[in-house]
Image (cartoon, rainbow, N blue to C red; front, side, top):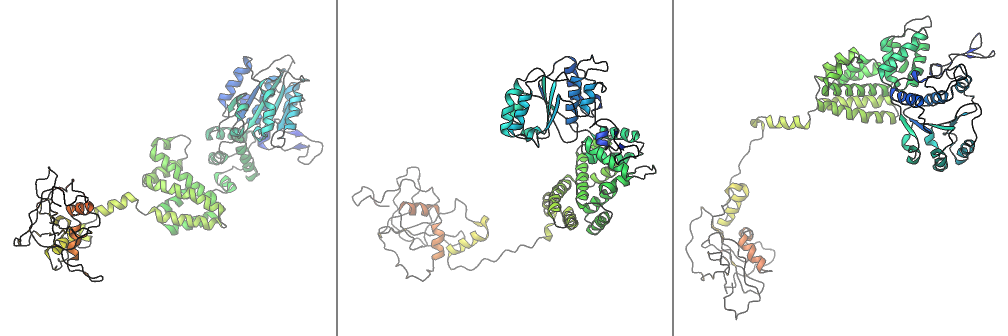
Length: 569
């Protein structure tokens, strides 16, 4: 089957009055030389120099997305290495003649020395064994025996392992050309034995120029906007774009009318670009009713809900890009509507709003794909996006709260101090209501007397309010200074044989319970209670307050007996 000729001659088969079978554009305009390849200049230069200088590798591997010329390049390599020229005396050339016996047979896929295998259908070791056994024999009619293995990543692990030895040291008359779209699935042991070429996606301008030349050769008139839509939908694939161009020519008026942008948009099920901008503008402005009405109109006109969201996502990306890089808006390949409307919208939207819209639309695409009704899912996404678009960001919300007048805040009332039965309770109430009213560290510290579990020591804590009158002095035992030499003031804990007041019966709340709780919080009292485990505060009495001192560190142990030189503390 001729892969490059524009027509095929049949024998009375349907397809034409003279037996001419129609060929689709993807096959009719398939590249036959390196010069025909679109957008692969680096690979073409490398292979051209290698052929001219006779630096041919034993294996090549071509990788890239679909429809960019991997299989076509493999066939061009086979023709370039086996071309003998019109006179039959030529050698390997980067410009095969296309008329010699080898070039014609390879183009028609009937050459006995150029074997093309589809690894997607022949994946096992037995298939590779046929290749290994065939490489031993010299070519029948050509200069080199070429093995083209398409979709090589589909081979099994054992098949790859069986091919390694032959691939590393093949006979001098054998060349391998592999093609794959999943280069990561090919073992590294195979990659290390091949020269690798990464075919890149073809940019939109190159595709538009290529499609315009084919349309002119076919005698079809097509608008520049229509070519732009086809090139954008092709997504870098020449074969996909040629298929869309072929469909657009068939979709147009058979009388020779021009193929307009609206015709291609209706054929692809795309929304009008200007209305897509209008839809996004309504959503970002919070106008839910207008946004839903526009979505309904586009849906009734044949636009796919998924394609509408993809357009909104693409516009959001475009607005973000020109907001970050303003020079991108003046690129020559940018349509006028995207340049004008894009600049207008990005100036009115913040980066936070664009980033939030991108995330919501990206998540919405997955919801639309999984939803039982795509149009309903798209409507819910637009409603959600419109409501969040008018909401302030966290930074704006905090700024609004900070800028709010203080008069709008609730008035703060200071409750009156409750009546307390004792100065200690009054002091605690003032401290709880206003931390600044708490006594300073230099204020008189409470005096504590505590009793151990054996009843040997009684401690009494006497917090004194600053406003309370100085109580009359009462006879107290002389305090014994602690052994800590750094503390010059007499310690608060004192030894006493007074058994203290009797313990109240359970269930009855003592009158000075709050005073004892406040006394238990004092650092000196806590230090004494830590020294004497099990001690409890039995009574709080009013008396002279001792100055604030550091908590004693060297207190006597409980094991000190009556025979000690120092009196018990």
